[in-house]
Image (cartoon, rainbow over all chains, first blue to last red; front, side, top):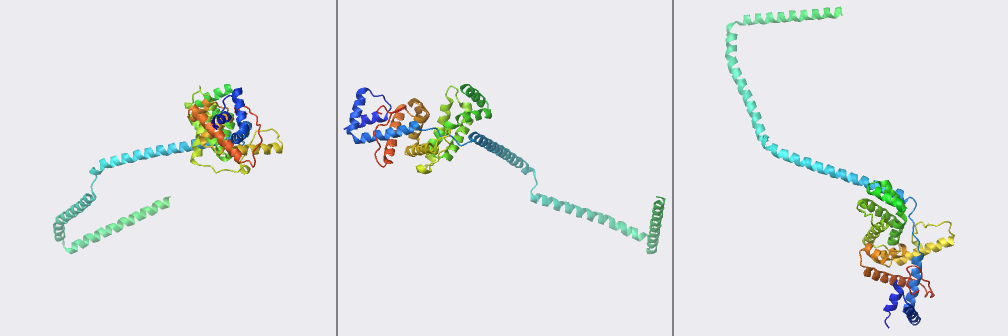
Length: 179
Length: 199
């Protein structure tokens, strides 16, 4: 026996005319499988039709608002990080470009070392020239006076220096007494 | 409510979060109920309902006011729950340990509360035998009284596919209920809204 039409009549929401209704009742009376299906679905359908809406726990809206605020804060933070990342990347690229342009104009370490050596060499050469010029001058100067003459000049300069220092000290102590 | 809803929607579409909160308040029960029926767990239902409203809030500017807001919202909820259900297959939960949520009532007797909770748990256990699409179709049909056309639209199915899924789902639910009975129940169940003509 083909049970399918009866199963459709049982489970689908199509209206049955009186003849179909009679046929179905007759079939259910003699077919235990379809009768069990009718019983099972009848009970389930009653459960479904009597089912209530389950309500969320109290404070659902407040929790949603808090969740929205957290979500927005997270979005803002992500946006901030994205902007920082973009800026940092742009700055790094600019630095790389600038260094790429600047590097050829900068001296190499070997060049810097060579320039220092060159400067030292020039300094020594200058000192040598000065010494070469000064040496005959000094020899001429020392040969012009006897040793006693040089000693007299040195003693005179020393005495003059002592007299100058004594004058300064006396002047300073007088200024302090006046204050 | 309808006038208020139109005003809240207009404001929400302009970025007013307070106006959207009013919509959350108005639709928290249907959305939570759909999520609970789909996921069978109050924690998952809470999370899914919250996520549904977040997604709706983000997409509110794309909402077409010609469409019913509740339908649009419930389609977001059902699609999210179907995805979530697929990602994480939930273990079957016994009736005794089934979470119940808070049921709207006045001052019910202990007997009626227990009976109702047992019924809710029984329904959830039965729904768990269905795949997510069939389950969503049953929930839309019996809790939200959607037509076949509306279910087809929300689940992106043809009308014949919806009829076929509902037929298969009803058969599976009936078989599951019979399997859980120690002996065959008595005949003579009355038929009511959306009921089979046979009863």
